[in-house]
Length: 272
Image 1 (cartoon, helix red, strand yellow):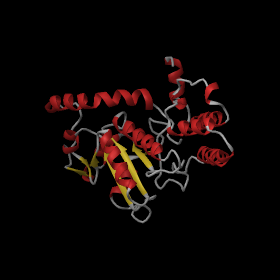
Image 2 (cartoon, rainbow, N blue to C red; image 1 turned 60 degrees about the vertical axis):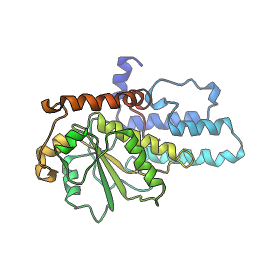
Image 3 (cartoon, rainbow, N blue to C red; image 1 turned 45 degrees about the vertical axis):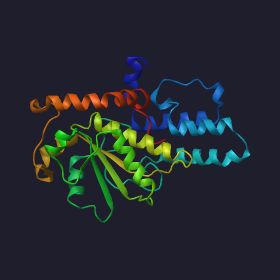
Image 4 (cartoon, one colour; image 1 turned 135 degrees about the vertical axis):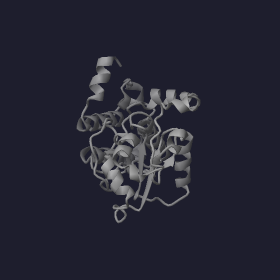
């Protein structure tokens, strides 16, 4: 993909992204695997779990698969036409969202996060997990009350693995963030959704965690407005001069998986 195409893709509105997603899935449902020319656009990524599932249905097509195709089509149409539904289509999102930097992700403001941390949504939301994707020295230097520090994809896999042995809690929401919610938080959000889809590739659109958000502006924006809701009430930037060696260490350990994530999941369509 050239730079011009990338630029146009990144500027697509949410409705345009949903339209592209639906067209791609429909095209794969009614095309033979051998005749498909796979585009290099992120939405066409052949490694997407739902695309793999559709390909399997096409290859092994028989009357028993008609219902499976119809079910996927119905789910795709519903999620595309009703953007306020959570990613398994079971209900609407619980929190008000804002338009953030990442059109493919649902974002909330720091003001909504503060309301949540204060317990004002306790009647509507049973469980909340705030995932701080910053490096440990950043987290220890100040984080949102109640947040957990998960900055490696192996930890996200463990989170999903623990859920597999439990009954589904559809009212459990997850909120990701990093320092600015520009890179590390969005990547972990996308990784969780991709892994969750893969675990449910035979039961689309079911998910362990269908309601996920990104904190717009990240910890920095939240700290600037709600210092009293941080513990300790401090902010340690990733590029702090006292942690140069720590930064080098954590970047080196995450470099290998980050490269693979960029190749296979960059700007991937998460509603599928």
